[in-house]
Length: 227
Image (cartoon, rainbow, N blue to C red; front, side, top):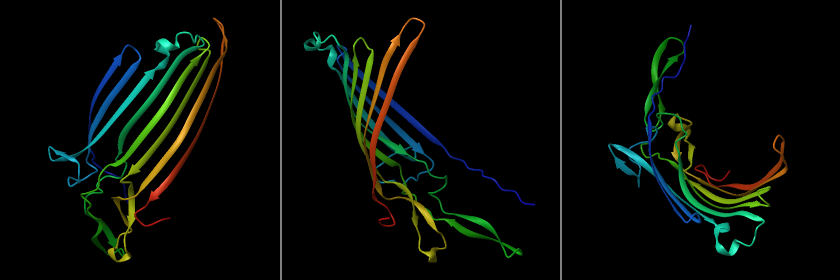
């Protein structure tokens, strides 16, 4: 008879701050930031904020919008109900790795059914840190003909650095791999959506919509060389 299971203990904490300014319902700016900590990472992260004995990741973002249809030179264009330009830039973090990857630990084994022992199961890596994605985007929203037609277009470009990946170890180590920050990838794309209110009666509405997108995701580097 044998039993198996998982008894992991992980902790995370996030703090947020946000500020928004709106001038004359035409110019909108939003600034926000997150300060995150995760027990999945060590306390020897270079370039991070160290506080309360923990390394913190700082992830800011800024977004701005211009409601062009509120400008005086747009008043005579009655078929345009909304023309809104958007632009933004932000940084996000990812800690999606198993627990205890920063620690060295041993596991119990049964050898040839007659004796018990322990073997090294994980190499310590106290420098492992957040995988970060830097993303810039620009977009346009249009409402036309008394809001019967809506169009939205977005283009974005992002670069992910410090990829959380498993690096292959030499066989002499006795372990197959360990988690590390190594590698990068990029992702560029465009998305567009269209919505039309074909029928708009009091008791019956019929809307038709469609969306299309295209993106290119490219691996720029990996810890074990190009694959």
